[in-house]
Structure formats: C-alpha cells, structure tokens
Length: 378
Image (cartoon, rainbow, N blue to C red; front, top):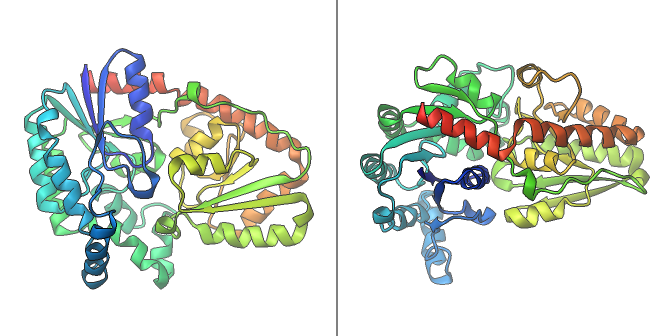
C-alpha cells in the first residue's frame, strides 16, 4: 500500500512509518517539523522564510500587534506546492483536524484537495481537536489539562490553541473532516473517552514505539538518584509543571544529598532525549490518564516515569503492577511517591524493567502498524 501521513507533533507518525515500512509498505510523511522540536519529515512544510533574520522581523512585529503568526500562511503555501506529489495514495491519515496548521480557509482548501485526489482518508485523535476540546470544556472527567484554565487566570494565554478548536472557523474544518473520513482512531485513553459512542470511531491503537531503535538499560544506582524535568514553555500549565517544580523543591530540601536534579527547557527532540540519558526518574505530566509519546519512549528505555497511569489505564491493559507512577496534580502526592522511590531504590529498577516489558507487549511498532492496516482496510 501507498500511505500518506499528514502532520507530526510527537514522533508518532515517524514510528508508525517505521512499522509500516518494515511490513513492506510505501510511506510518506509531510509536516512542518513542529517548531523547535524539528521532527523528521519526507516532505517539509517548515516556515523557512519566517525563520530567517529577514522574515523573523515582520513576523515578530505582526505577532505582537495582532497575535497572528504569519508562519501559518507559509505552512499552507509550502504544502500547496507539494500537492502534485500527494496523489493516488491508498490511505491518507491526518494527525489531527488541522494537520497543515495554516489559516482555516486555506486549511480546508488543501484538505479537500488531498481527500479528492486519494482513496481512503482517516483521522488520528492523539491531541486536542473539536470533540476533545468540547469534552474537556464540559468537565466530563474528574480532572484534565483544563484544570489550570479554570483555576489560574495566568494560564489562559496557553489555552488559546484549545479554544481555537471550538471556534466557528474550526467547526467548519471539523465538519469537513468528519464528512469525508472513513474513520477516526484514538492513540490512548485520554482520547478514547471523548470519542466513545461516535459512529466513526474505530477504536484505540496504542502509540507505536520502535523498541528495536531504543536501547533498554537496567537502572543501577551507584551514587545519587537522578531526577529529570523537561519543560516546554508552550505547555507549562497543561503539563502541570508547577506541581513538579514545587515537589522537587521539597524533595531537594528533605534529601538533597541523595539526589541530582536536571531541568531542561525548550529543547529540540533529539537533544531532549539525549539530556535524560543519565536519569533514573522522568517527570512528565500530571493531567493525563494515560501516557503520551515522550513518556512511552522513556519507559522503553527503562526509566521510571511520573505521568498518566490512572485506574482506567490499568484496567484497559489488565495491569496488576506499576509500569509508571501515576502523577496527580497534587504536590503532596508527588513528594510522597518521589520520597518512597528515593528511599527504596530497588523499586526504581523493578518499575523500569516492567515499563520496558509493557512497551514491548503493547506498543510494539510493527504490531501497532498491523492494527492500523487492519482498521484502514476493514
């Protein structure tokens, strides 16, 4: 099969491509690299002109005056010039409802072109879209990434991206997508919940992880226990970073001689994963029920990850032992769990081993690719 994957925000599509290619399929990824993360693509829509010194000056001026990023227009223009290469694919999959990340009218124009010049079209729900945003704003779960929005006025700027998915212009895009897709697939529990019962929902396929390319290293503690916190300022509130920062302050005061803390900020993807190589414990996010892509890759390396590992997740995978630490938006809970691990280092090694086994059993990139093929063809 010829498969076109549109958009990339987490390396999910790259790992899926690796699985599909290993199974003998032809796969092309078109995306803009997602800013500073700079994910690999086959066809790039990166806003190269806007990132030059000449282009960045008007970009910054316009953004400060209007809050509009002209790079969005460049994404769309660059995508348009690739259209002739994006024909006659058996399957096209969008990473979300606005995978090109251009202005709404141009987004719909380009999506229509893609839909009409290819065979089957599918949507992947692995982040915020209209149905997810609607679910979150209505407070249907006991907590969510929307908690800071409702509780902390300082966080509201960070949530504009989510509110955009509820705008009239995006609802038109959402309707266009759902009128034309053959189905929608969720990547984890957080996106399964908003889609349950929808007639086009095809079910959950776990994030594919290429374990063949990720070395497992058993966690050994010869000296200090190393804690790693990666901060992306664009998701500071939605990840609940403030809870981790406060918990680290307390743990450092209590047992600073037994730990080393590494904090990294706004790093490209490859640099980010290199930064946490020495770490035993990774602090990921507090508002999720299941793991995102960064957490899963760290688990594949055998790290202990503080992330979403709620009871819904444990039930779905029939787990009886921890493969990750369920990180709650509660400083006392984080301090308690961190302190327990620091005082019981053998538990760190045990969770790390179980984490790797879990990834191999449920997130194997070839098995996940086969699941996608099954849903696409049936």
